[in-house]
Length: 113
Image 1 (cartoon, rainbow, N blue to C red):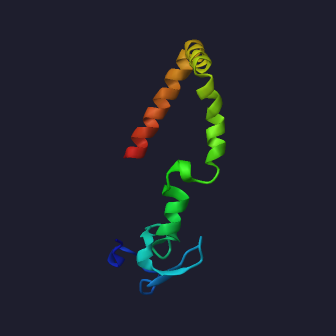
Image 2 (image 1 turned 90 degrees about the vertical axis):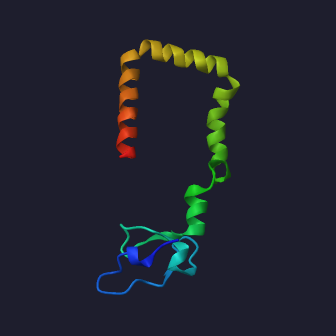
Image 3 (image 1 turned 120 degrees about the vertical axis):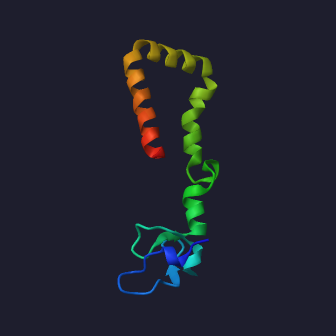
């Protein structure tokens, strides 16, 4: 998946052929790592398997997700109260809500570019 010709080798050397994963500690060929221009050797610190487990695995499978569910539990069990509370807040803070919406839209535009 990665092409070693697009990777910058460490200064004055040839591209590495193997690398040690910082998460699992196993030595793997560089093809088992994602390319990353910012890294000194041109590859991520984590192998693709560990990267998936840490960053890309669905949120509900990640460690600590139960705590996230517990936080939203109140809103789900008290839906009508939550909706009313949010409506009141928006009615009382119209200008602040508009500013936050503009900021989020600007951030989305910035991230896309």
